[in-house]
Amino acid sequence: MDALFIGHTYIDVTMLADVIPTGDAKDVAKDYAVSFGGNAVTAAFACAKLNGPVDLICTLADDWLGSMFIDMAERYRVALHPRKVKRSSLSFIMPNNGKRAILRARDDAYITPTPELDLTGCRALHLDGHLSQAALDYAKRCRAAGILTSLDGGGLRDNTEELLGYIDVAVVAERLCEQMNFTSEQMLDYLKKRGCRIGGVTEGEHGMLWFDEAGKVSRLPALPVPSNLIIDTSGAGDVFHGAYLAAYLADPKGRWQDHFLFSRAASAHKIQHLGNEAGIPSREDVAAARKRFEKASS
Image 1 (cartoon, rainbow, N blue to C red):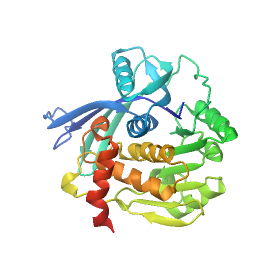
Image 2 (cartoon, rainbow, N blue to C red):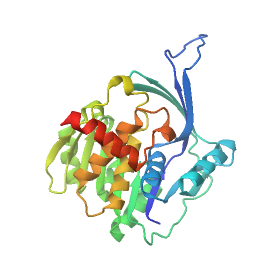
Image 3 (cartoon, rainbow, N blue to C red):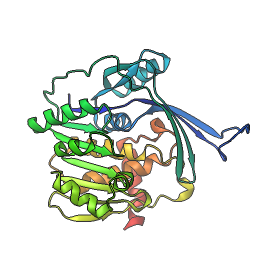
Image 4 (cartoon, helix red, strand yellow):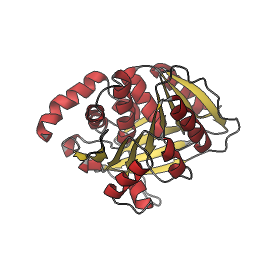
């Protein structure tokens, strides 16, 4: 095991349309994509494509959507360790002018316990806070073993504050700042106090405010992808997390600034494609995005 991810599985149905119908209205979408979804799940697939096989503890149902997910995982070399549920979770996504509307249906009534895994050889753990007790238990185990722990803090969950006490790299969303009544700067101070070595707040088109290994705060601007190239921003943050973990695994002694520059370009690639699977880059795609957009951002 090189890296372990823990999160809730969705099957994402993304539809590109000019309008979102309401009432009895009908319309025809211009395009659609069906893919794996979920924060840590998508990050796991991105990391696997960019760096190699990973392990994933996630929800899984014995239905045809679950079978589809198993097929996807096999193609990406993601080793599944399921926590069973009765029905697969669905996420319907409608991108629109750089934003996206999302409607989810989730089954998190677990019918099997969390898998107990041997962490021998594991070098990184990534969590999104779902499967809350499993996330906390594995974070404690990894911290005790000296394994890097990473958190996607997309929103406030019942375990967020306790979990942060065992996290090395925390990259959180503005939504979490709002829920905790923090500015981005205050959130960074809070992450430092909780013991995070690296922390950041993602701010969409404004990039990320973050602090490095020395505690220095700086801004990483978003790459200037032209608006006419932006198709689907959903999943860009998940790809960002998966990409910085891939960069870390490839160069664990490298600077986090370099890891984040790599993941920023991975996100820039994602937003130009519809759906998670189409948007996950190869290393060649990341290099192409850096070559195309970094010069314009300097």
